[in-house]
Length: 325
Length: 257
Ligand SMILES: Cc1cc2nc3c(=O)[nH]c(=O)nc-3n(C[C@H](O)[C@H](O)[C@H](O)COP(=O)(O)OP(=O)(O)OC[C@H]3O[C@@H](n4cnc5c(N)ncnc54)[C@H](O)[C@@H]3O)c2cc1C
Ligand SMILES: Cc1cc2nc3c(=O)[nH]c(=O)nc-3n(C[C@H](O)[C@H](O)[C@H](O)COP(=O)(O)OP(=O)(O)OC[C@H]3O[C@@H](n4cnc5c(N)ncnc54)[C@H](O)[C@@H]3O)c2cc1C
Image (cartoon, rainbow over all chains, first blue to last red; front, side, top):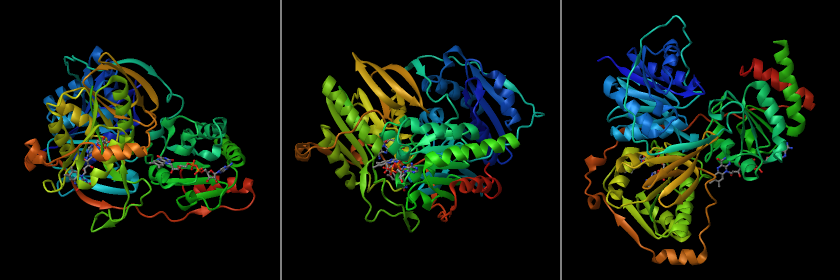
């Protein structure tokens, strides 16, 4: 039986999110040569279909409706259910983003199906699609399979490689008209805080500050370094509790779990709850005054020193590198 | 107002995780209320105190969850329900848990259900939305503010750092995000009172559920611990030289820049 997987293309500010391309990559691994159908949902999204195809989708189904201008679980669920009904896929993949986390359990619930959340890798083993995901916020991992219903999965950003973009690929982008009604939640207002800079969960580089940063202003040198490296700023709970920054920046067991290529921890002691959220980063750098700080036990590279002295030098060094490159 | 809180018993965040026979080793571990569910309990108590009504805390698990339910009662919840699945279900998943909770809540006329946004052990964040879907009521996840007036609800939802203001009406399920409130500690009189508050224990039979009805839709085939990180290189010398060396190492050895 030929396999078929759907992938939701998540749109933010008019463009597709990188994690959606990673989800196509994930679906390719799962489908083992089968068909990948991209799905777009929104008020004006059909034009993004080609890009999904260039990243590996074979064709795209777009549901456009004025009621889908903003994400609501009711609206998107109606759109996606119509696509699932038409395509009858073996599985459907989402990014493990605010939207994916909110929507996928509703659909999986409706279809009485298994959903594997926060997937970091996928293998095909003897006809089974085996998903790996962290549990205990990364203190352990589990391998899971779906045994009932449609195979639902949400894919954690930054873990599964997208396919290289191939502009010569082409495929069908078809519209599906769906009647969207009875939205039970209404978005009245959106305040953008995160829009400055790169999203934490998708960032390749994270500069994180802890209580050692000492004040809201103390985050400035971190922001500068983040800017030079095209990264995002994160924080420990210590820094959030002290009101140096917003809780949305918190990394750890009760915050975001991140896996960037480079994580630079500044003035963070390395409490177990913090490590849970970042210790699976590819490369970890620690900057801390205290040579005994636990963060050095997980760091690949450490500098014992005052972050306010080290960071400006580091920023300067990277700046030079960029100019020379 | 008829308010329900979904509460999961979980490992203390201080605990290191070890395995025995391929399973998570629970021996000697400390257990707590899932931190996000503490926000849920606190919010439920505040809503009840403002609007009147009753807070019932529900947990699906084993007898041991009684301790966490008593803590929620000591915080100020009115009643607790423990759905003990120990003898009936071997391997449950989020479908299992949601189905059991959904079945229990059917016909209970819940006005407001508050869950945690995610359990810090299983970490899927599925149970809340799945329960709402079973009950055919709307839900809003990761909320940081909840206002209720005349059956109309206004909520602030955290969306990856952005804040959405959302309106809905009751009945509604919400899931709690950090920042929603400051959970209170149980007071001594609270702890005394909690001992006398009703804690009902149910099994699948009592919900007219068969094992087959709640059979998991996923299966765990292996649990493993991440490779232990080797201690890295702590640099030495003048700070300026350390910084240059670090940049060099990130480029040529780690190749991340
Ligand atoms: C239920 C629960 C959940 C939790 N969840 C999380 C979570 O998700 N994320 C999280 O991070 N924490 C979490 N915590 C808190 C955690 O236990 C720690 O309290 C917290 O991580 C400490 O933050 P910190 O490292 O910034 O502060 P501290 O432990 O105070 O460390 C500050 C560090 O800064 C260094 N320092 C000071 N000044 C300088 C300077 N000028 N230059 C360089 N270094 C300097 C110090 O040497 C020290 O090591 C949780 C706790 C509990 C109980
Ligand atoms: C019979 C049974 C057997 C199980 N066997 C295994 C096993 O073998 N291996 C394994 O890894 N896991 C097992 N589990 C646990 C199960 O897989 C999940 O941990 C559970 O379904 C919750 O999923 P989660 O941890 O991802 O929670 P999330 O979906 O992240 O939780 C979100 C919120 O839902 C609510 N919630 C979650 N769980 C409960 C609960 N139990 N009671 C009340 N409210 C809750 C809380 O408000 C929580 O904050 C079993 C569960 C059951 C019921």
